[in-house]
Length: 133
Image 1 (cartoon, rainbow, N blue to C red):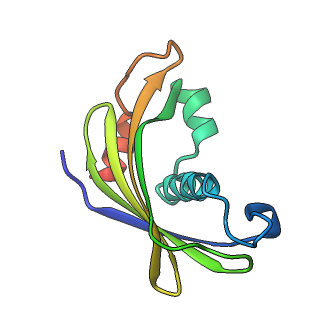
Image 2 (tube, rainbow, N blue to C red):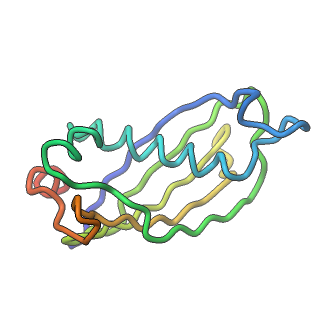
């Protein structure tokens, strides 16, 4: 199945996000992308703790490719744009762009999988599938 959905999430770069030169530490871009995906789910009416408790499912990153194009710096206001590219029964693929003043700094291609409490792949909840249609 293919769906087109997108979401924007804004965040400010704080001192704790940077190295001593005031440049965002590379691993923090993964955190920014995770926050954006979490907020994307919230806009659809879901939160991860509720999905875990009520449906017994968890989102896990199966694969992630990241391309660093330019650095973000202390006090920058960033926009994380999340595009749902594809989704299927147990996996979805997203592209995330992290931008500052419309300039793309980082591009991530993320594949997520849905697993149950037993750690094995399971279907997305029907309510989430319906929301993505």
